[in-house]
Image 1 (cartoon, rainbow, N blue to C red):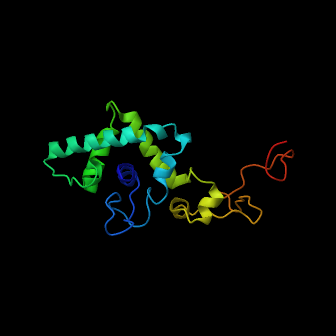
Image 2 (cartoon, rainbow, N blue to C red):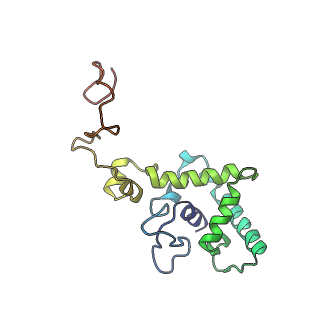
Image 3 (cartoon, rainbow, N blue to C red):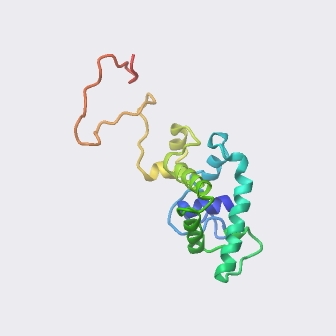
Length: 176
């Protein structure tokens, strides 16, 4: 729940149900949690998957200290970070990623992975993510591949073709 609440603080989304505590419901539509942020964090490729329990504990310790500093009473039925209101979660995360914070690198890394899950579906093959309706890819308007499975872009992003295809390029778009 703590990692979900952190990811939701970075890319907010709507609650999955009325009793959802991890996702604060600070934005309409799906956010990082629905996009698979925790699934991405748990993949070995992140290099931090084994440290997630420690990071969650640290985040909850920071949340308890934040609550004490601000005179907030936390619900003991959920992890401390989850018990914070969205505005307080945001303020705490802002302090954790601020220049000079001794743990900044860890929190920035978690934030980057939360964004990455939403923006790129890095934990999934792009075709699978699109087929499953990945919310971040859909929000960005990523188009489906051509029937042969390749992506082609008939409209150039600069409104004009920038270069001719090299004569040694294979039909799949690879150099020889």
